[in-house]
Length: 184
Image (cartoon, rainbow, N blue to C red; front, top):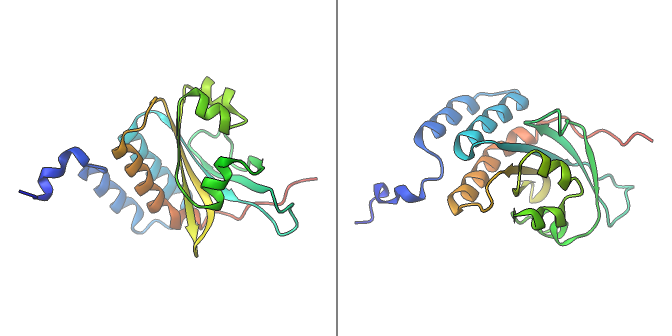
């Protein structure tokens, strides 16, 4: 009764994935390589999908109600190239994810269309759900870890797995190059 082995239905990271990540990330100095390894684990856990990391690129001179995001890493550079920028105005999504630092789970066409300006690109790639995880540095949201998939609904273990991968990614994300200034 109550043994850890009794919790197999709640497995978040299979042992093989966990061992691969521990071996790959322990000494990895290159944040790009580390994120590629985390994406391999994401694919092993969830199947086909997209992983992007957006960095907070907001500058002191930007309007106070805007948040600037710049893509710092992507598993699909053709559709979502590194360096792509987004200007986000206040919405329930920005308040939840970027201001309060809470995970956002979007499931289904309506949820994604309500949140993402590029929904048509997302849909064309076959993705119909998202998990956005805030990444913190010194208590402040500095980036987001974004997983899109073909699942119509995320299982609780999938959400937990993505959150764990985001936590493992955080030190590597914080070493990505700082966002560049917007070209005028």
